[in-house]
Length: 279
Image (cartoon, rainbow, N blue to C red; front, side, top):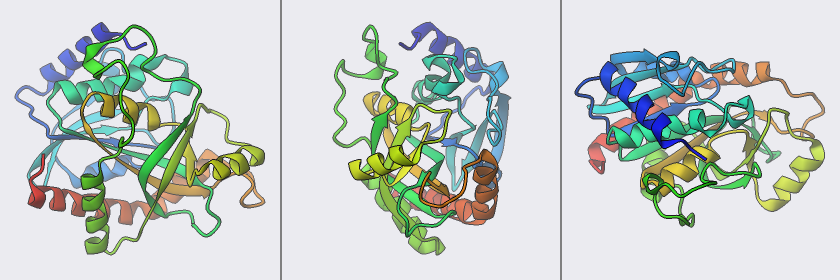
């Protein structure tokens, strides 16, 4: 269950730090993605540690800052890193960036992550547009008493990821010369990596990429009426695909190698978003 008072306190701190802010979209930068923030003109910054209920990130590759920025004329809240359910701090820290985004007036939520690929033909460094997701976390942040802030009691999930924004992202990829995959993202609880048997089972269920995040934010963002877009960097082949162990170091090293394409794609996407004028 998400504490509404915690969300209000978090937003009050951000509102105080960024008076007059009017973001149209929020961008959440997952593991290894934080350097993408350098593409934005910086209008302000606040540490997660200064946002009540959010707190410092506990994972390497997550900078732990909220940037108020602008790109292609679009004011944006850029969350450099995220909190994860496996950190054991409950749902408030996971949900607060989405809550802040909605309270600040954002119309869209762009979620990025690092993921393991289950498709043998794919390679580390590939970028995948998330078409849909599978929640294998065994839990949802919407458990508990109903809070109308998050939309209806039983949110529809037939189209969690916005098709119009996906089309713009694919258009941006073509214009920037960045090849894009597309598929289904599956989230497990973590923090352990998956077993080979789990990967075989999840691949059979339709998972093209697996990770430990994104799904909770996508669920509550969609329920709250935000247009949700998801993008994974395939940082490694999932357990059992290759005969080698999995490490977080591989995740961060792959995102560094893929950073040029990640930045090019995000910059071009914002150009396409500005031209489309749909937010």
